Amino acid sequence: MELEEKITFLAVREWVTAQKAMKKMAKGKKRGKIVVHQELCKGCGLCVAFCPQNVMAISDTLNQMGYFPAKWLDKGHNGKTCVACATCAIMCPDAAIEVYLE
Image (cartoon, rainbow, N blue to C red):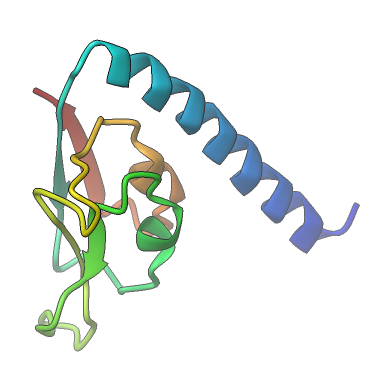
């Protein structure tokens, strides 16, 4: 298995694990809170792409390093809220995201 295939496999495995956790948490109606450290984020968009609730987006403002960082939307475009599955934090290569369960 080549390196790219391994990385893809690991990303998909983490996403599936997060999906299972999200389903369990949705039953308990738990709510998550996401903190994005704006100055650490390079705006790669992995958190946005993998968020199952679509509550992550890319900011319109630049950080001090000249990147458009990710931001947390209290309510997603589809009306859903964060369930603290931590997919965004798992996918973040810069460790710029913290997830809390409220």
